[in-house]
Image (cartoon, rainbow, N blue to C red; front, side, top):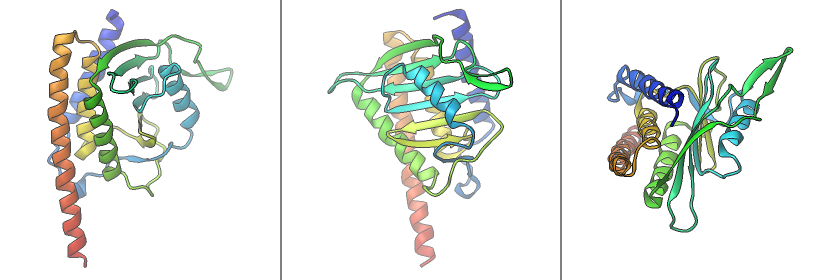
Length: 229
């Protein structure tokens, strides 16, 4: 991995860590209202689609998390299925140059570039579990009737098994747990085999924590519903 990519990965991970430390997970559910919605935010689809296609490079990821910063280069995590029970591929990609660029008063997408890419194998069972858990988490966090809104800030694009959720970096609840996992996944793309195996153990534990959160959230929602009967 190049020195520049190492710095970018470190900076990305540190930024997520700082945000998460500033937002305790124990925040009450009624106070946790992440700025996330279904679908594409207004005026974002062309940019987001161009970046996703660039990073996928012809592959068909089952899960992706793409970051569209206001000014700097775009980055993304992708989880690409293998054949049958074969390992999946975990990919972390960063644009070499910012994809969205204004030129002569027009916005153009610079997709004629080679992004920096790191890719490692991921056990199929763990990858499938992660996809299922992320989809459940986003479904529980973002109602189907809540459309993604426009934000003039760094934007996140989640795509999980055909479901698209977009918005600002979540700082509480299940969304916060997903960001913790994404930080771990980015680090895994820069690890050797032995250390990466430990990352998978950490990820399994974090998915257990997410499952517990989802179960607690479902129980709380059921209690509220029964109280309203």
